Length: 158
Image (cartoon, rainbow, N blue to C red):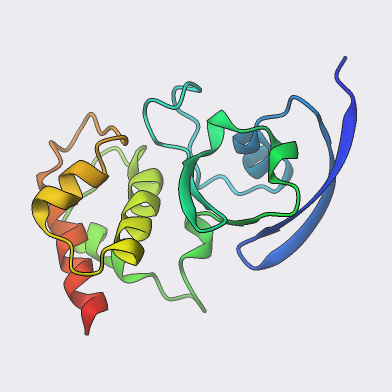
């Protein structure tokens, strides 16, 4: 039996305190303890990217971290991108450009794209393809995903 550890994290702007098992994965903490199920659990090996979140400003795969490692950190999940009921431009562009099929990869893909646009606001198609290469999609072929990210980049530039 693993021991319980008390952690405090800021998730989507709200501070949470919880006692967690020392071996609990961050993805499980977000989904099972906080109820933030937009972040998807895929491979549990860091290969698919479905669980991508922003951790202290960087895109990370939450299946590769323990919840205790997040103590004192700031996290943004897909639920934290929309503000006052309005979707983020990336979320809107994914819908508008039909960059979603089954939707399983979408939250992780949007979070990695959000981080890319923060780092490289004037990003091009090749840079997008390289930047999202750690996030897998089995349905779309990536064409509309790249188109959606480019469209969002142009919207965010203005």
